[in-house]
Length: 87
Image (cartoon, rainbow, N blue to C red; front, top):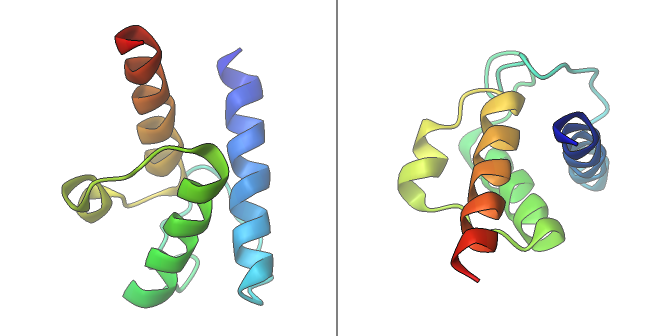
């Protein structure tokens, strides 16, 4: 199940990049800023796109700790799990 979730989140992340006109190859280990060249504004736009498509809000503190695509995916998976447990 986790693998399916990663694939879904990667697809959403790709869509976010494409929406912003960014056509770069990446992996889960790709650094958002260094490998993908996202400046702080573009990174925020990508995160907002992902938030809107998965329904998970990423706190400012969590956002500041996101370094890689995997960090973003892991945070969303963890938050979704937490929200399900709270429901």
